[in-house]
Image 1: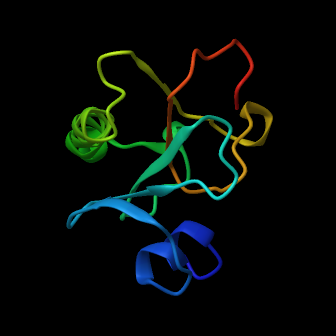
Image 2: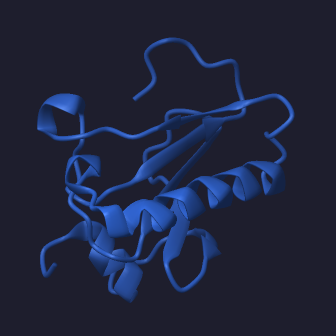
Amino acid sequence: MDNCLFCKIIKGEIPSEKVYEDDEILAFKDIHPVAPVHILVIPKKHIDSIAVLEKQDEPLVGRIYSVINKIAEEQGVKEDGFRVIVNCGRDGGQEVMHLHFHLLAGAKLGQKIV
């Protein structure tokens, strides 16, 4: 997607503070964190949102959750706990139309975070 912010980050056209990368997944620190640890985990394949996932995307989404677990451990927040949020569509709070997972941790999280 030519105008997708996250696709530009994946291509290296926009800098990011990466915490994880492989052939299918990229994770980087959010530039406007709402928690001490706020990492975005995205598929490199452009998928608009969770609402348009297809059967073939199921293994990728499963891997994303495994990567989130690994990142939580590396960040030292796995034991105390963390939150994973996926916003879907404009009314659901999704600001970038590229599927992404917010990993939030590092403090006791209240009900209103993202």
